Structure formats: structure tokens, C-alpha cells
Image (cartoon, rainbow, N blue to C red; front, side):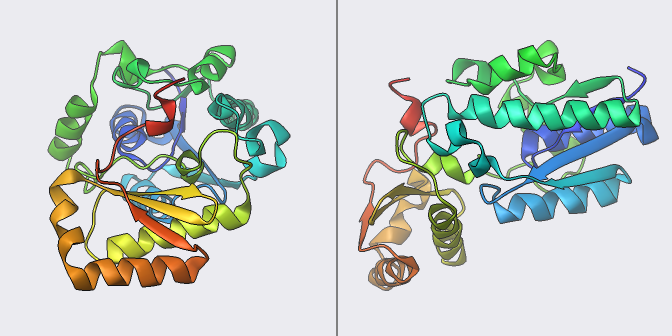
Length: 251
């Protein structure tokens, strides 16, 4: 490839891809990130830091997915409308800059999950280098560690809208509550967390290996107090712990 624009989320997959592309194509690599209310704040911070470290041009484009009615309605294929708008922006910028290819960080593990966004990628001829080389998430973590990327063991960080059950209309207030709530949990020492938004109830999921922290009375009280202060009436702790793609199980 002579030139490559990467749809950059700040997560581990696209970070690894960006690092490899930058080492091969150098100044012919561009990272494009759309930032919205659904973007986890720490992902944006990491994205900027990595782009600076790699000396890669970083396009940060403000984008409001909630302005897309089909996205805000939160149907089961919500991710299609998100990716469709993302790739339209990528295509526009690639054409403006005369960059030939657009890639994303999808890996072969993603192909086993419900991913309607992949359809949008096909419609825009987005390439998936990590799929082409049959890289799993584990391969990406090992490769990232070898490259010295600080987030090689960072937990998965999908958009905040993924915490809201399908069919529930997404609002900026809900996304803000989720971001603040998950920050509360990280501040208390939890690394892999999800705050599922069920209207007036917040359902907390933490990694099973971290569940012992929940049995500490002081921590449990702080979780309840601080999460309720964000705007929830009830706070529930999911006994089964964190489970990836829980709203996709019947999709």
C-alpha cells in the first residue's frame, strides 16, 4: 500500500494496526478518530498520546451519532449506522488527502460476534489487515507488548452506547451517566467494568477476578452512593460478572 488512512478508535486493535502501519508507511499513514458523547474519554486521551508518540498525523473529528435518527433509536443493528457514518467521513478525508486505502482494526475474533458494522465496512471497501493475517485478540495483545505499547493489556472499550439495551432511545444524558459511573468504578480500583443503563437502574458488571472487591462493605457503599448521585435510583450488582456483548446474545 502506498498510503493508508486508519479508522482509529484508541482501542488496542486499531492502536496495534496504527503502530505497524506507521513503521512501514511512515508519513503515508494517517489516523482518523471521530469523537462524540459515546466515546470513552480515556480512549480519546490514549489515541492522541499514541499518535504523537508514533509521529503520525492525527485527524480528530467531532461527530454526533445521536443526530442520526436510526442510531439514536438504538435498534439491534445500531452499529451499522455508526460505522456507516464513520466510514463516510473516512472516505471523504481519504479522497481529500489523496490517500488510497482505508483500514480498520477488526480481527478474526470479531467475526464470531454480532457485528452489523462489518456490513458498512464492506459497502465502503474498508480493508481488515488483521483479519487477512488471521490475528486473534491474543495475537494483537502479544504483538502490542512486543512493540512496547502501554495498552497491550487494556480491557476492551466499546462505545458507551453498547451499555444501553436495544430498543431504548439513547440520549446524551444517558451516555454521560455511563461515563461518570464507570469512572467511579475505576477510581475504586476496578479495571474491567460495565455500567448497563436500565432507565432509573444502573446494573454493574465487573470482571470475575475483581468481584471480591464488591464484598468489601465500604466499597459497596461507595458504589451505591456515588452511582446514585449521578442520577440513578437503584444500583444492582450483576452476580455473573462482566460478559462481553451481553445484549447481542439473542441477535
